[in-house]
Image (cartoon, rainbow, N blue to C red; front, side, top):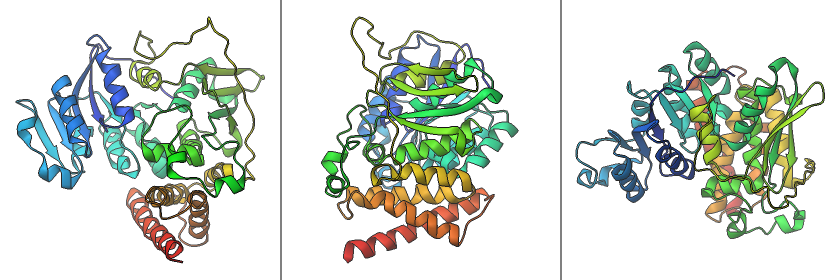
Length: 400
């Protein structure tokens, strides 16, 4: 992965400002002593928070991407001079603003793919938190990064850790990348206990505070499944070069094992502001708001391998299968997961059905409809078809 020198003053376009990653990014910007300037931000439907952010940072451009919310928004609530954009297409506009050198893509879900591609095609420095962009269109995203000389920098804590650890060696020296996972709140649950998991239980993550969708993904470990695919593309890895280890304390964010047996890890308290800041300043390091390790107290670091034959970690096996097949298979896994998670949140399906549905969707797609090297239009079509297929399957299950 290529490094890009930080500019004297970065103009940043932040897509997804009202989510947890967006709010953490704004905190990093506010602690940059003027080295970072917010020129644009986009939110989906949390207008109250979006207005507060606009009043504090006074960006020139603000976008409301939810069409219904956008039609109801009162422009007079924003500071004078604010240029207000509306609708999902406004993400593309903010991603390609001439005055923005860096685009932070923190939009949740498949909605972030087009804006990520737009930013890369505009040769922006892209700090990527939207893992779905790489899961769905990894080959296209990496090709665009190379073609348009647009650095792609990971914001996920795991991939940010790998990114930093890789500075200790060359790509040819990598034996494997080891992604750590907290294991979620159910890492010690039996299959019988998993069958009765409630939404409240699934949203009680032991380490991180995140949005509903990402928290559910952490509980099912589908977030780690998505990260496996993301790591494959970010770091040009094979399925055999990617491993996952359960690390409940979440201090070691990931590791790189080199061919000589050396293991380089990145360690810090669980605080997303650190990988965000490093993505925005690398290869430089600067003081920031992230939590610091307290070395005056005892720390315990546990690691144990996941049993991927069990339903609790079944998503990891699915991800490695998807990495081996490549093509359109990861797009299907992601789309099925987004729909299934929403059905679980709405109380329509049990917890275990989320990953089970993803497995069924991928198997059905591999038997009929798989495309080895899909175009962006084909991926969007497959995504839509998978969502429709998943809805039919889950509606039938819910009504059975």
